[in-house]
Length: 86
Image (cartoon, rainbow, N blue to C red; front, top):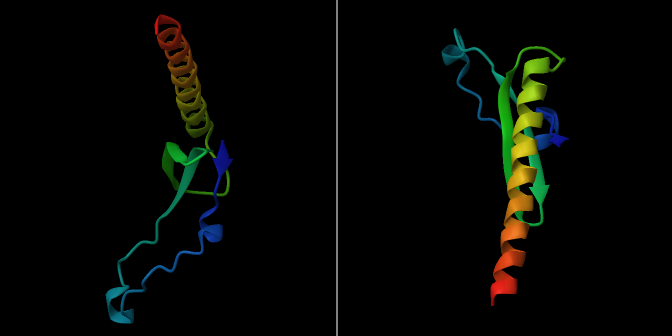
């Protein structure tokens, strides 16, 4: 699982005109993802409230990663069985 800080994304966010900025709250998000070959699977995305990551968000990402890995193992198993039948 990789963590990509928002500061390292090098994304330019358009700024609203100064008179429209009143009442607008800046919101930052964190993203947990898995990258394999040419596929990126987002495990969890959540609002950044502090520099710490809440344990519930870590557990959610871990559980989803476990499901991704199980599905990958199942796909490999099914592919091997299909080859044997051929």
